[in-house]
Image (cartoon, rainbow, N blue to C red; front, side, top):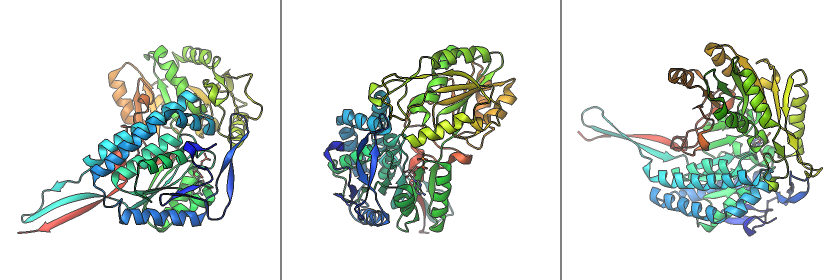
Length: 482
Ligand code: ADP
């Protein structure tokens, strides 16, 4: 397994593919069959230190001296290179994450689109002039932080690289990326494409390794000026604590327990594919997955029946077979999901999908499950499962719908299905959520749409133009000229 011809045992530091300092490696496993894929570097604090100082050097010299227009052109070149390698990138992601090929291909297109969006945005990011006392001219400058650290998970490596690295580079920062130990091949491939796009050495550094080692070293580094993290709540807390030591800003995206609210006047047939897909895409291993389906009691039986019909046709199988679901990313993740399912023994199981008969024994497969009869305080209705598990909850009126929708510690994504325009506006205001969708879910995942949460879902916004503000700091200049 050689992503774009490079040796996956290497880290990209200062523009060179290098071996990890301690000469240690981790095993990457193919979740579709449990076989060994390849060895990857087990980056250590020493590799992180080298990567951070390479990024600092790039920021202080060539990369820091680039104009916004030059950065825009680098990103546009990266976009072209990504698209030229669509097939290989999709295949790598599919094998590594266990993602059905079509979904992996969509992620490549999204990665390219992020580069395109931030290429277009780089030279449109500017400060303001501020009317002030007579004799002064006051203006603000949007400046990069300097060196940004990026810790990403295994579920959508390419999409998260796109939104995080794309925005950070456009804003003028130099980056150190620590991909997840479960899936990092497309991060390495992306690094190689950045090299081919001739980004100045050190502008993007990639150090694979364990969270507790390379990841923790990155979040403790005094050379890092901003940290963006996507992953679990507990690790998010630790990262925020580490960042506090150095008073470094953090952007945290920590998942959710996102509801879809189906009202009595909803177009249920239009809703059904969204209700289900939002729960099973990427085998439910999606931060913005919709795991709670709240339905007005007058449509509850109908929605239950129609979702169940769809569930019974869902099949999980090897990623390259490109079925509805692939395997989960690892046996560990499968165990986590199975432990949750055991805690759902008191719930009504409405429908269960199936596992393809040719799915290899060693794969991390789990069939999607739809539960009903759930109380909102049930553990399965409160905690993020990160697997293909959804639950139905009935409600009686709009107030109860809002209460139930907001009744978790998360607040990432929500949607409501109703034809009533006034209710749409009320719900958009009342739902505690970073994104609200009306009569859809996800709006196709647009890179233009600011994304992030509140509560345990984290803070800060990624994607869209908004992300550029997070990757910059504001300087106020007040000139007294009389
Ligand atoms: P998951 O449980 O889904 O794997 P994690 O939050 O553990 O999610 O992992 C997401 C990313 O965070 C991965 O890149 C992982 O290596 C990294 N990570 C895990 N623990 C730490 C830590 N203590 N400090 C920094 N990064 C970490």
